[in-house]
Image 1 (cartoon, rainbow, N blue to C red):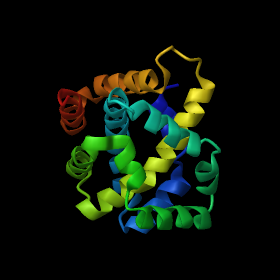
Image 2 (cartoon, rainbow, N blue to C red):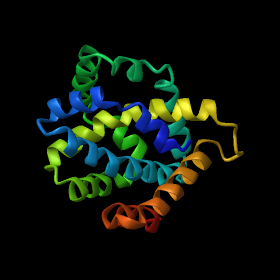
Image 3 (tube, rainbow, N blue to C red):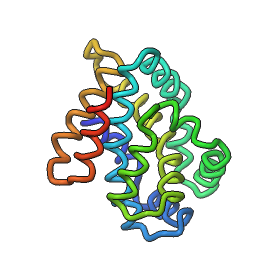
Image 4 (cartoon, rainbow, N blue to C red):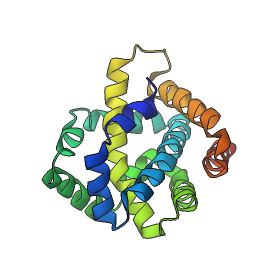
Length: 182
């Protein structure tokens, strides 16, 4: 199972509905935005992991979310509500630490792919960041080490996302932008 599949498994209809209510948009739009955002987030993280200290920062964030508390709390509105409040109050610090210089690129890409306004895209990404980190921790624990650590795992996931995004010019374009910047 791919990393993106692991993440998507954590976002069932109930969680999509809660996120859509919070953002004030329909569930189909949220689903499309998430499908665009996940490969972009993973791609941005893969590039960040290649930078000095990047892999350690991502590993630390994944370890902090490894308990599955966020994933478990998504099952009820109170848990998601608390997470949403934390996301809005947190200013996207986690997002910035895992995407680095690609935060704006990913936000613009998700906005283009989904049609959401910039504020809703930023909120969606802040909601997804801890979910992605918890899923990375879960995925890393379930998969045997390939020797590349978290950076290698993210590189594989980003390459798979880029290959599968061939039909989507917005996702493929954002991933090309991310990997074109060094």
